[in-house]
Image 1 (cartoon, rainbow, N blue to C red):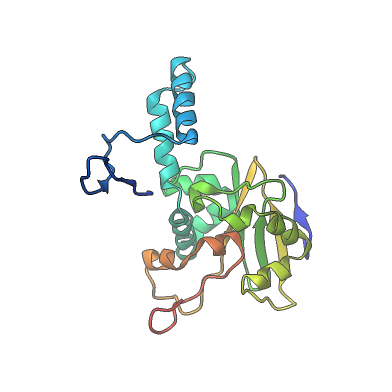
Image 2 (image 1 turned 120 degrees about the vertical axis):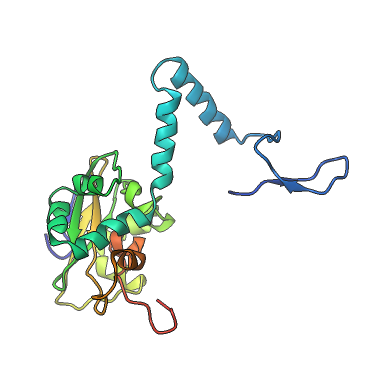
Length: 228
């Protein structure tokens, strides 16, 4: 697959004033706070699922815990391990979900394909139909990933899209676009940055960004003074 070709598979803190004139204070768990429509709807649905035996309260709780662990740091852990461990890298490229499990990262939905960037080939991930995304590894998708302009232009003009993100690729670098689906998600394995040879696994993971694992950026070493 070359050029513009692509694969189809398809706290907030609460504060309130009391009428009796006391100073406002942060809301506590036992305060009587009105629920939003979405919160009320969720609680009602949760009660129905439990009452009808579809799910147990413990299953719902465990699912919330999995959701809360979904951050870009999880994917970054996989990338850093792959940079340091060729055998793990090979397994990750062969079966992304199994490799994630090795690091106690739970990927619950869809299959996961890891695609490697090289000096000759740069990979970009999109979902042209909606916003399919490996959230257990990257957290919630950014707004731009779900936007219609990105979803369409990433396929039609990937180099132009990358340029708008500040990534200019040489013309001899092939750009491959991968179209996520409900059944198959993609994670980019970025190139390891030059000058990172002496860094530990944790230090390497701290360099890896969400955007680099989507393909709209590269991983870079911090500049002197701590600037990225």
